[in-house]
Image (cartoon, rainbow, N blue to C red; front, side, top):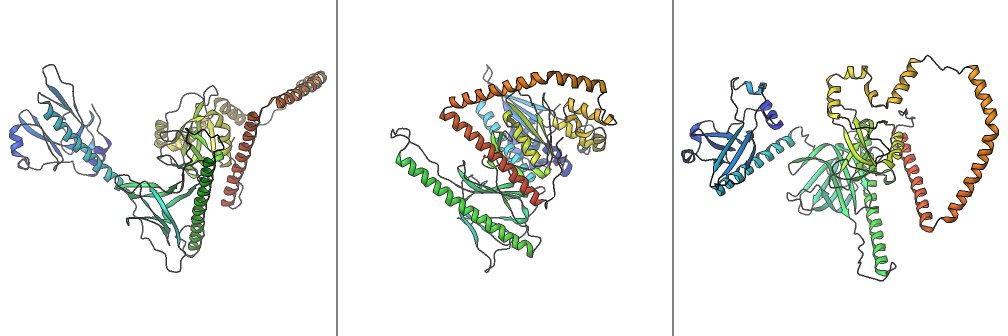
Length: 541
């Protein structure tokens, strides 16, 4: 038998059983006499004839409604399935009686196909409306209302950024809306050209990020919040204020060569526009940082904002949500801000990272981020290129995040986290996360724990090894000399045979390595300054 959906379960625990009619006389008598299926939108009910009687069902109990294909005799069948509890009655159903019979499915056959199609359309509309109402209720749950915005006083600096678009859109139709973002005493205020206002308090911002226009078509400020704010009846935790950078378009029909003057001028205009926008955004967030730092000294409740920026040199491709994107680390998180749905992962919330399907015969591997809060589901980033593995490990080392890796199939993380939550003490007493370690490493650790100390080799082994070293010394020297000579000859031959494209590729590779090293050291320096100069404890084994 079918299980009841989560919405029905939640409603049964917190509210009374949904009812559409309290008395029989509230139903439509004309419709009842006709003994036909009809939909009462005002009551949220669908009335079905059952054994010659009109029986109302609240839309909350409808699961599916479908029409089959017409039969040879010209009739059609409509099947309606209901949400019902399992074989064992659950506590929320016992209040209505223990000896209950639940209707699982109703089927109706008719030759009036247009009427059946019209009834199905009305049922679908009613189910959709009810689902939207449930979503609205769910969005209102655990919603934390913001405090009042304290606007800037006459003597305060005017920190404004104009001609910005907001994402997600505050329009019900999803249209792009332009407005102005201004920093006030305890938060930001975004005002559209039509006068609509969105406020974001500084205390609600968890991460403030700046996305530069390099290799992107937009430049933006991104705010990741502790608690969502309501926009279009939905709680939103990621808000972006952005403007687009004009792309250079190339007309392929032209045949003037690569040095076309129009294209060069267009590129120069785009570079000037990028620089102008970058300077405007940087000036804005620098003023915000100085302003909030001053306010924080006066009022400790107002946090001092610090804007962070993704490091493209440390980025790697993967699938954190639905599509392949470039995941870029910042000082405190891992982000992708330019996709349709932004992705922000706070590194301080991550306990460890596990690499799955690490097999160099494969092109990709998967990453699993295990949070310190075990009640949270793990975060997956799938289909990461295998060539990025070592760079990612170096980055995790710089962030002092422990990682493990294993080959073979992926683990069932839902069951693992459920088992841990059932008895966390037993989990750590039986070894904790050691099951993620490779078998060879785990066995080596066990042997090290069991051994009392270092065991020196015997004297006979030492003498044999010394004799063998003396015996092979001349041959080793000769082989090393000949090997080095051949390598030098090969290197010289390769350098002589390299063309310009290969030399450019080699130089680009060296530049990427240099940028990667500088970016990693910059993140280490930021973390050291934030920790007050304390040297972090390395967790990598």
